[in-house]
Length: 321
Image 1: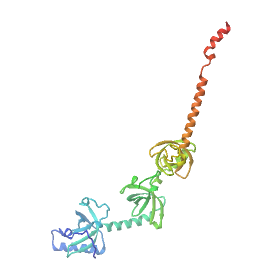
Image 2 (image 1 turned 180 degrees about the vertical axis):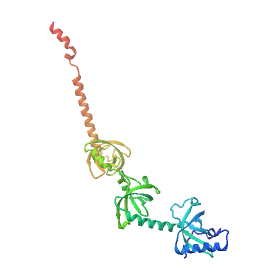
Image 3 (image 1 turned 90 degrees about the vertical axis):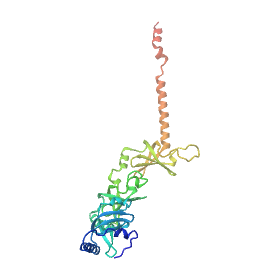
Image 4 (image 1 turned 120 degrees about the vertical axis):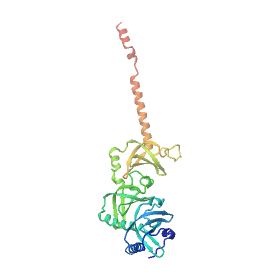
């Protein structure tokens, strides 16, 4: 069997050999390596050294695992593998050149394939299970749920808006997810994280109503208007026409991200979003202030003492006289 590994340094592999022992020992080691290569059986060996191109493994004969055949994707600091026992398959074995090429990745691939069969046999929609984040993208994260990768889309990570998947998960995290869809005979699996918690929109519909004045925080401003956080997982939109202007003809909204404002709920729209009005909230506030002022004026007027209140006793006394 011949395999091209550019990273292999024959001098690194040849160093050491079998070590002290008889020629019979030497021949037996090579016989076992040839047998393992032909049958593709799995062997265990101790990592004796880490070099630029990969790992040197002691199997009674030094073998070499090129970087491309190491199971982990994190190939930084290979020294951390020294002293660890790893499982490998023999890719090449040549007694004449003292060359032994090994693969840890092939062992991991077989294990993953067996895991996949077991996982798919018991996988079902709405199932809740643990997985490990393998990689992240702009649109979500791929999670290993047991030999099978499922996609955790960014829209299913949290009820509130998530700008970047890495704001919620990181590679290597162990997370609990819910199976949302199984498509194409398991080739496409959709996972959810937010579905494991209560939908805050239900709370919003119970606690809020149209016409109510509430305090919100502006999250982003777009040409369509300003988006605001109403509560965790619930967002509202202040349309451009529902924001007062700085001056006549100036279309720049009077809001910016991070600003907290009092707005009026004018409509419940699709799930998780409602229409808000800053203009109506300002107008309602002004009306309330005018109404309160007028009421105070009336109360003050009613409370002003008359001449009768002040001199009533005197007038009564004069009248009797």
